[in-house]
Length: 258
Ligand SMILES: Nc1ncnc2c1ncn2[C@@H]1O[C@H](COP(=O)(O)OP(=O)(O)OP(=O)(O)O)[C@@H](O)[C@H]1O
Image (cartoon, rainbow, N blue to C red):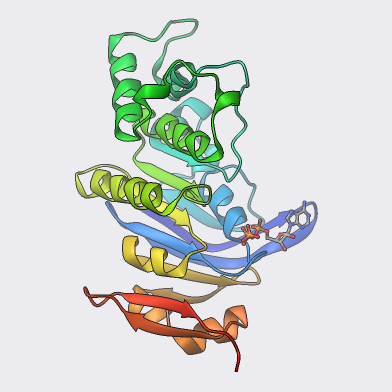
């Protein structure tokens, strides 16, 4: 699966928010969308998911515009996990994760053995097996976030669009979830586009970064090129030092003004 967006312009309630954004993700790639609050990251993700009409430009998923796909067809190709997914309160974790199989079910058909297996595998990968019968309302924020991701994985998409997938997770679960996503995509699983606020994390998991500012792309490329003190200062107005971890990847350290 390859994703290509060119010259994407989009408005929300009449206000243009994306002013001509280009980005692409090759088969098996991971693109992290970073940028300050309000830069347009979530809006770009929704556009890539085919959920937002474009004022100009084009988005192609293996050559096809996701906005023109039938819902069911789109849900077989891509899974989109918004920052705050709507979760029907009365459902158990297992019932909710099984909803990820809906695009594969015939009309009125109940999930079959292969659907249960896909949902079971996704719950296992996200370490939710002890929670399968719990109602969604009883979950902690982080457990809910993992349930949303499990539902997306049960969909077996070719493209995974994740809006701040680890915002509610502690550092251990962050590494576990991002490591899992990375394993899946390296293993012939979905290509990934994720927004991430944590710049170090973005650079450690994604192979390319797109830095957005005020609805435009301010920089694009591998972490070493995008995560520089000058760029981060210019775009975020933040003082940072960029160090290297033992593998040579950039580590962004916010520093207090003297
Ligand atoms: N309905 C709307 N009408 C006009 N402007 C909107 C509307 N919804 C959002 N916006 C604006 O669009 C811009 C982009 O919002 P978006 O949610 O894509 O930003 P973001 O980069 O994901 O931000 P954050 O990091 O805070 O989540 C923001 O300035 C926001 O205020």
